[in-house]
Length: 180
Picture 1 (tube, helix red, strand yellow):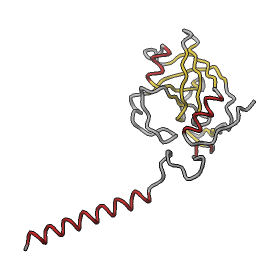
Picture 2: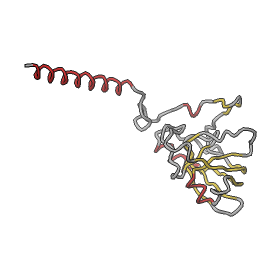
Picture 3: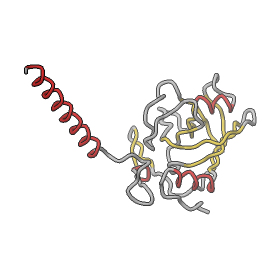
Picture 4: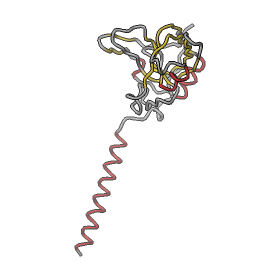
């Protein structure tokens, strides 16, 4: 008789735990892959402030700039990006301060001529006292561009409007005009 009561209590505990877990999942914020409307809008369009500097994200894909690139990987691997997806140091992605998220850019290493297309899905770089840095790339991208050991290089970054629109739609985000 005692064992039957213990079994019933355990079954009831499991039902309560499952019910609480189901309620918690139902109340959690929605994942970006399951938007409520046609497109999912996130805070990536809103101005933001880092270390007292205000940044205004673009709402177009018109962008070409020359500056310095650096790479990031070890400390951020597995952490969420600004788009909510997990950062993977072996993917071909990048961080930019103002480009729409996501965007696709062509990055050219001006020191050796190597090029790679990257998906911009994060915000950055935000170095102290170095406004020359215009993009952070993953460890894999730095290897392809030939500057992983050096840590930084001079690059030209060009946003690719058509590929950026396709990436936005794949992320269920509003695609922008080219800005031309």
